[in-house]
Length: 296
Image (cartoon, helix red, strand yellow):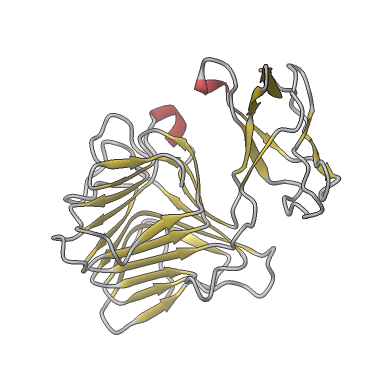
């Protein structure tokens, strides 16, 4: 019998559970002592949705693609809970917690995730022009989200937009969107005699095919989803997170509740966090031994 909304699921040691349905119930708790595996669909545009309040990988294994065999269709994992719901010791709630276990999350690799404006984008513009690609096609797609970095004194003036169309993908890509820009984003070269400084706003791709996010209450409460790994510093816990999107993540004003946090885990030789898009965060992005990494 399939679990229903609000129920808990235990995956004992030696059992391998495949999540291969389109939409699962909103589970209260998932305890993984065996394996929880998300196999991709053969259709790259097929999307699945998984919802829970807590996922605890306790001595077990959770896989959303590996480095050798990535998750190639679309998956959204949404975590639910409020600040005042019961907490798991060390891990809290609205969390994937990993204790003496392994977490593998690998989305499709994107060859270009950051580039620069080729021309200044003025207030009110509904398109931007990127730097010349020199014949190498840009693989960004209609419907994907981008961010245009601030070139003002406030870093909060970065702007997110959804691609409505994209042309000239192997020369100077032109991206159009519906909502006009609120701020000016500068792109030019400043000359000082024989010297010059190239000053251009960065443009980043936010969309990935694997998305990990907090629920719809996250922005108002500044209380999003988190991923926390903990072990006594002996490499018994590992997390490899590559090419996924994390949004509505981190829990404001709570020490250690960062979007991705390796807590007292040791030298993390067996782990990595790379090529991810982390946005709409309510705390620092990634912490390992108290060192904070903001672009990953």
